[in-house]
Image (tube, rainbow, N blue to C red):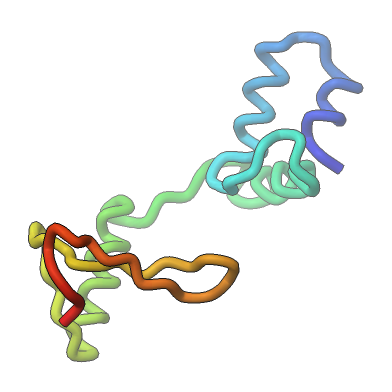
Length: 106
């Protein structure tokens, strides 16, 4: 069931429905009419009394730990440099997209 249908059935106030809908879909990449958003709302309310958890040090600490793990595994991370290509997926298949202004893929 989606959160929109549940709220429409129970409440009249558009402000209240909007606030609860936001809470139900926050961080899920779903909309209030998406399937199972009632479950995402209940799941959020069941954990930590409805409070949203944030990692110690903020979300930047997650990025820092990922970078640390990558460097420990031998990766080189470069920032503020032009990219000659990017990897994305089209129809589930990896696709290289070249930037002709930069040059070929090394």
